[in-house]
Image (tube, rainbow, N blue to C red; front, side, top):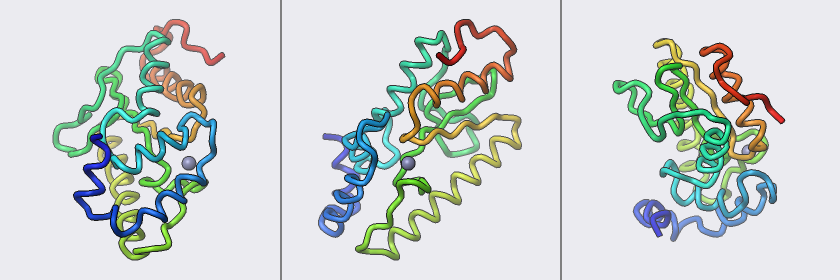
Length: 175
Ligand SMILES: [Zn+2]
């Protein structure tokens, strides 16, 4: 499977498997991102088309929204957004709880602490930098945690699109 490549490339599989598996067990089951999705996300890091991303895209599509996926909002900013509304200049990122330091679910692995702490702080700093660069260029950034209820995530995206494009989003109200 594609997701295993990352870990084997980094050699993490031999160094911290048990810790990561136990982390996955702490994520709330039955949420939008099931523990399996979280595990897949952790394995694949920022790989494309994780389960939460696909769920969000499908829900947005059902609401009649049309968007681009996995594209750089701005070519000069080397960061791919998961869902992009180019005309509205809205970039949506689905952030994994582990990689982006979710306050509710991030647990520092107990092995290789320095490695993980440094990695997390780099990720968080990069998120902030990307947000700032996009906003400087007139973009609206919507960051969605993978643990968020799907309908809440959809509502936040719809709200952002509406606020930019007016009332031309049909059937966009949250249930
Ligand atoms: Zn979370």
